[in-house]
Image 1 (cartoon, helix red, strand yellow):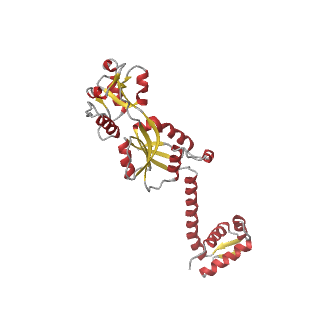
Image 2: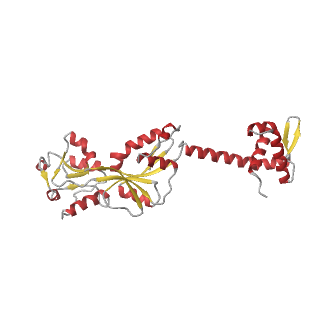
Image 3: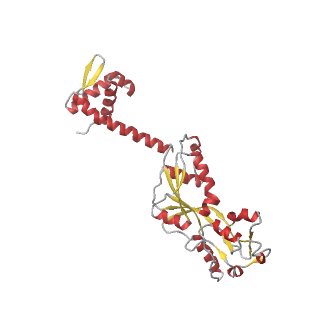
Length: 314
């Protein structure tokens, strides 16, 4: 016979209080109601659970045996409720987020700052480094979703939501590539220079290669470093014409270390997008970050009380 959980809960409080009347007060019911409930529970179990005394009630040996099991169930239920309340209140939890260097620098980082300030109890783990790596992690289930720089096309099994667009630029050191400065330069001319861009198999390389192919040209970079920072550093030293997001090179251009090559044929825009794996279920914390990135977070979230946390590179 299956026991009624409400009877077990009333038993738990009566045993803890040692009094039916005090238990009734905690349960917002009457003492006779508790007495009837305990009588029914004793009938179902076929044994006495309580002995009345002048101070209230005490457990029989059978009652103590039963209490040991009921107490464990009630405590597990309480801990489960608290864990859910923490998750709902975003007091804890974690998000596995894939991103690319370009997306992180130019768009995502400031928004992660805002999310972390609002929900410091949520730990954010960053994965990736390139858009292609972020997509691989997404497909393998390592991350919840990705924010990455992409260009055209669609992604099989992935849902893309564009977030922003950005421009790329070719940049060079004035002391070494002055012959390219102050005039319109064609891609054919650039193809004869030492081009520095992200390594092969990156989406940035694929994008630039496609641009060159569309003009009937072949992309054969002189150097293929891992990051935009290294591209810029190599360009500063005059080792080639670097290809980077325009925003990444803005400071070096403003300070005169580099100049932006004026292309005769403007480059297509690229975009920063949120990528999700179709059918993947997100945690509450991941959904909240996703909504914030998409500008859909409810105003009610502003009033939530939160705990402490951190952003941890994976």
